[in-house]
Image (cartoon, rainbow, N blue to C red):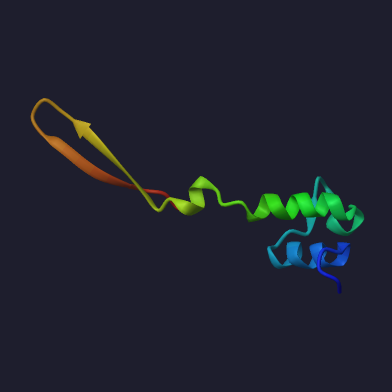
Length: 72
């Protein structure tokens, strides 16, 4: 299979768990659509790259610092 061919894109998308797109099997799309979809799936998102957020609650009596965990 040639790198950058339609079959190559289908294989890479299936490795990522993508079987359907817009209600159709990915095998039905042209290579350039699959290339854009793979690029979109490879972009890191905020939820995957951030494991915890810190915030500060200021009350009249104390300052409470907590860690907010984000489930990825």
